[in-house]
Length: 394
Ligand code: PMP
Image (tube, rainbow, N blue to C red):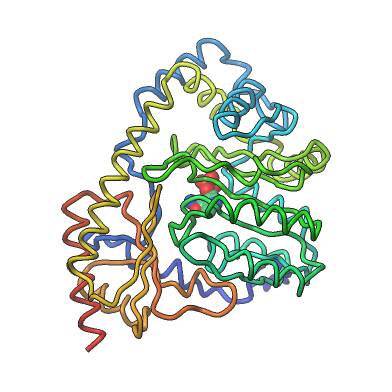
């Protein structure tokens, strides 16, 4: 058999603890709070079908042709409008459509990271971003968080310690995995720190539109006067992740280089999907659609928090999300891998916190997701988890 000499970007081991967890959680009898899937019953299937039919009628040949690397102009115009609602003034020349925001994370990493470079992140942070940064040889430096997001005093220290760091990666809204939101003062402080240290900021905001508590907070990009914030978002959480459409907003200088890399990666994002989403955004009241998702997630979050308070031991701490799909739980003194095994015996699953830390793991932590489970499953699943926690605590 051929033995391949893989590049340094390929992990040495095939072990993938998270994949194993998600596999165990995918057993149909398991109530899974492990993944982060949107509620499929909220996908706008009929409206998307209507948009698709219309696109084929109006632009049949055009949508099936190769197209511009930065993306369909009609969609980029819609994104300019959406960004305005998010308090960011931008133009079509500052935007590229990508194959999900995951591709944008990968391409930005490819643009900025040389092997050995330091990337500063929240600790814990989004697992698939950690994996991407590491695949380009980055050294990850995590900054602790509290309920108000990244601790900016600790960030200032870290930036001083690593003046050669390449960029700060952050998820300010309803962070994955903690569900926490960065407070407004912290946002301003982060930009100040980045300005003083002349560091780029990669702002990952796939979740910001689905807020059910607290008030709208402007993005870091809103406070950026120097073109240092690279902003990413996605249609995955507001429309449908299977369409694989995300976007990046950055300075025109940065976008010129980004276009070269996107061309190498896939020439352009799926043209048909881009036309269909643009048509959808023109024909459908997307605010109303987002409100439907927000209402359902608010209900599920409230129910899960209420059941956690009822079923988990009293020494448990948990985040209270203002939007989207994750709750972060800390059970002092519990080995969460052992808890996971115990939970699987009870047919319920979550993701142990260890997966999300870049530096030192904070023991006893784990992530719970509620977006893809109905009321009955939430009540029953939390009850089973409560029993499992008590079993491993004793
Ligand atoms: N960033 C974060 C923080 C995520 O949680 C995810 C996936 N849910 C992504 C980016 C990628 O999402 P997508 O590629 O579907 O836009």
